[in-house]
Image (cartoon, rainbow, N blue to C red; front, top):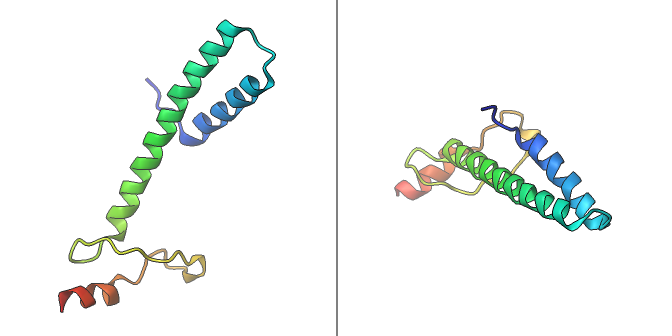
Length: 91
């Protein structure tokens, strides 16, 4: 079974929502689309939760505590300055 990409699932979900909002489709087809939309919504939510967990793992300090770090796209390194904030908790 091929795993569906988040972007593809979200795109399909957006199309389903648009069709359902138009209200021009029969009830039976609306129900099928709604069921597919629920499945896609759950899939997207699962993928977002997985991504969040991966980010948390990357953001943990040396002592294992996750500290919120402001996102700074201009930083360039892609890593938050964890050393300074980790040393505060060690004291």
